[in-house]
Image 1: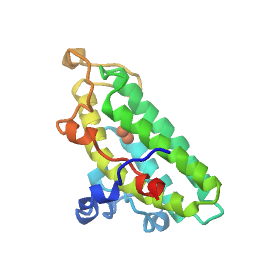
Image 2: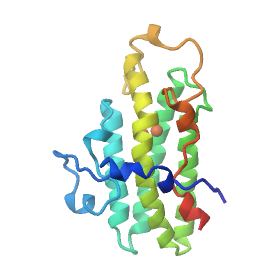
Image 3: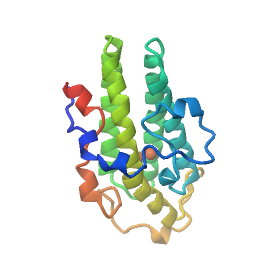
Length: 206
Ligand SMILES: [Fe+2]
Ligand SMILES: [Fe+2]
């Protein structure tokens, strides 16, 4: 069983700062789902890379759907969230590989670990442990706000600085690419982020 240090206790200020609870003013997210969610879409989550922002907004909606789901539909909603997250993380990993990140960079490693925890949650949910799945969803919301504002923000900045087009894969300013490979997350706080905890740990450790 994968054990990761609890996430919620590591990032208590996320709730206090209003990042998690603040509602995006012009959001078209279903308000009924949104009001029940740990994670709310907000300006604080906008990273200025439209493809990434759209994907993140979809993630927030799907996570809200999991949290709002009844016992008869929560597993299916969790499955949809995993499928979306697999694609979401896979695309970010691909952007990193295409722009001088090493294959074992810490951002991609965190993606792998989180997906593994989510899949383990699905297995546990299939055995009837829906309480664990719901706890995992809450932890995932807290983790995501931190991840988006640290690792994803650093990636978005990196991609903008090199003029990377996520749709075509073209680097419009190749001269701005780093000389060597990037092994961290590309952000100033990488060493701190590198050891960041992942969601699902408290649920899995229980
Ligand atoms: Fe992301
Ligand atoms: Fe990411």
